[in-house]
Length: 457
Image (cartoon, rainbow, N blue to C red):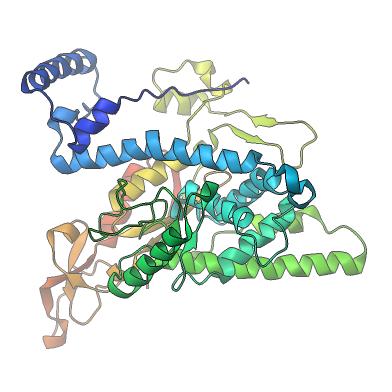
């Protein structure tokens, strides 16, 4: 099948202009506007595609958001990758026996951790880098154990222990990569966390700090007060949310209990436990009672190539995308009929659909899905919108006036007429218009969705 690569071009000048750190020449900006308009007019003149918004047409907020996104993509992620790669490859020549199998099993532990997160549909709740930092902490700060994990199994159990037992409300998790943080830095970080814990209820529920997370560095956590020296970058107030972190903690405890039972059963029986039982550690069926809305996708969601070396004798097994000619013709006008037999690199319908839902309904709902083997998406209304909220422009979309008797909570009872004082409609508070939300979800997922289940009392 070969390999696919993406080339990303970075221009530091563009980032400076977007963030306002450099002043551009007015004539240069005007010339750029003219060139952009001509290029867009030529490119989109014969197509029905929507023209993208260029930088000269962006508001200050949009430019700031784009600058933060570029900073994360081109600066922070490569920098963190380099630090984690150094941890993965490091060997202490003086303590070879102690570190034998230490950092060199880190990649396997990361894979198991991500597989566990994905299999239980928590992938949208975390940034990928946050999972890698959790695993890195097991190798950097391994006490009370005598040494870092020496196998993927021990590393995975320690990862579950960390999720299950770390008291995020009272302690930050400091991952001191390359030992760049001094004792003074660590002390300041703890003090800053304590202050945020007392004075800022909107702080990230999972507080992970690295040496690069000083307050002077551009951070997506704009809710932090000025003057803060340490800000978590790879965890935010919504990734993970309090509800998602609570569910992950409970699931980690349940997984540890199941793991202990499986190990005891295998030791007592003296024989190998069925492999499907072990796979249950990394998978869970979606439960209607756990989600307000469940979106089930049809076979079109299986289009992306999947590469797996788990349980196969060969190095890799590649599943090709099989698309019927009718589907490929209907959705991909520019593809030949035989395109259904090819591997579509980078085509991930479930993930793309999930990201579109997050962009459209992120203020209202949380998403749960498995981007690897999943065919369904679970949606939960955020706790703060389950009850009526005061009407604001920010919550005006997909909202209904609230019936004082509560009959319209999370539903559309507009057909029923109010009776009596208790049934009076108040326009000062609103609740989500579930019918409209479901209709838009169906429209956005046309051709992908198999069914929509709503479980809202």
